[in-house]
Length: 410
Image 1: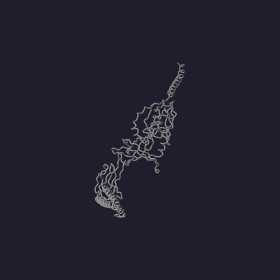
Image 2: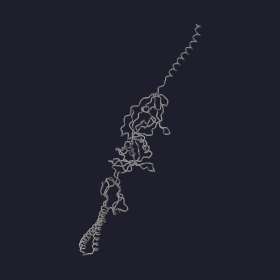
Image 3: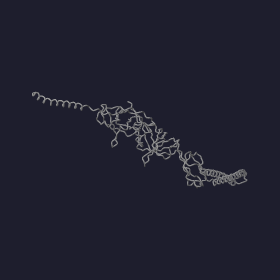
Image 4: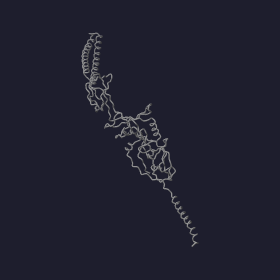
């Protein structure tokens, strides 16, 4: 029994060491298992034709504006319209005291009758002298004087007719009518006020607001850039004179009716460096009022080689340079500098730095550092957006945006 004791004491520590060693080997194998690759969502980009849309600020102006002014002197006897109401062309607005002008017309008519009677007398005398001078009964000088008197009487008749016409016009000016159909404004005079033709006293203003002009301002730099893009073939013009215009109102809502571009000015304002662009909008419900501040989106061309990238996939450095993360064929992430200066809705329009078929990270970018391997899953195709809804979302004011429905099809 004493011979077994040393063997037992030596064997137990060895067994314990073997167990600890085996446990350590198991832990080592578990720690060496590879970690799963970061999962990211990618979008395979494809070239698409994107309309070039420019968003311009501007103000509304009435289609027609008529300043109703006094054209004769006198006292206003009647105000014959309701301020702020719609009036028709030719509708009586004011009545100026017509009594002195009616008397002037009667006097002119009497002078015309007198001149007419004198013309009859001188004409008859000239006819008689014509016969007598042939028989040497009167002198040639007497006959010539009779002819001159007849001609002078004819001129007096013509002057009297002109005086009658002038008196008639002045009498007509005592009825002040609206020259156009439109919305009336506040009256600048009241009944009993004295108005003067020499001072062209302003009585009221009538404005036609259906349709309505919208005068926009475009920087000369933006216009020059646009013309260069069209000349180089980057943009394709689609008929600026027939371009459709969308309008955004002061409260951010979209005006429901589209307008048409009328013309673009060719003179640059030296104070602002901009040119005027005018559009015409129907305004049947009088939503637009003169002087409102608005933004208009005008389609000016088509960029046939652009990519639409979700805004979340594009980052900008402090200098404003844009970049995206691209997953290569080896599933390795790389950072790529791109040209993305324009926006539309929730997308950036990328015009350089990407190639057709490349995969751009659109989700999970915080897990995908440049140079790392990732597990990429293709993003679900976006539902096609209606053109009207896309235009309504529009670019930021003053930014030339290239807009279209995203195309993710391979």
